[in-house]
Each structure stands twice: as structure tokens, then as C-alpha cells.
Length: 144
Image 1 (cartoon, helix red, strand yellow):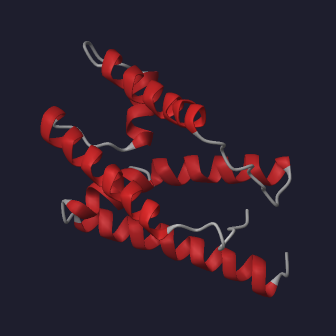
Image 2 (image 1 turned 30 degrees about the horizontal axis):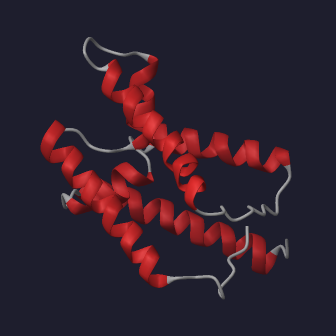
């Protein structure tokens, strides 16, 4: 995937980050839950009593938000520089990492760090470091 630096708008990116932080804080304050996507999705696989409705609403919001946004503006065309096999493998690796790390990037990086969780600090450092290393190895040493 490439980033069009001419179309990069730091103020809208900042606004988006503030909205994510506000939503995560409100979710924690109002529901006593962490807005970690993997945990919310995982809870749909084995729902407990009274747990299904809010999880479905959360996931529906994740799906509906870009659809509603597309009503007001044209969405950028994604360009992914990888084959289907690489995308499937990457998705599986993310899923395995999420299980081993007891959470995903949103749970640890957004919610865990804001709660000053040492486990989230370690997890966020690990997945960011792994991402940096992977990009360096593939783009600069392997030349792909």
C-alpha cells in the first residue's frame, strides 16, 4: 500500500485520532469495557448472556461507518502491493499474534497505553518493532 503524501491532511488525521480516543474513553467509562476489536469479535464466538447486543452493535458500527462516510465523499481507491496469498498469510499471522498477545493493536495501543498498562506497553512495543523490522527487511534488504 502506498501513501499519497500530497493528499495527506494532518489536521483530519489528528481529528480522527481524537475521535478514536474519545470513543474508547467513553466506551470504557460508560460500559466498563475496553474497545479492543479482537476481544469484541472474539466475544461473539462464545457470547455470554446480555453480551451479544452491544458486541453486534459495535461491529455493525465498524462496518457502517465507512459506508455512511461514502455517502458524503468519494472513498480513495485502495492499492495493495501484495498477492492474495500474502494477504491471507498476513491476516492469519495477525490473528495468531492477537491471541498470543492477549489483545490487538486497538486494545493495547489505544486503550492499554492510555491506562498505563505495562503489559500493553510491552505488547505495543513488540508489534511496532516487528512491523518496523518486517518493512525494513522486505523493502530494503529483500527489495520487494
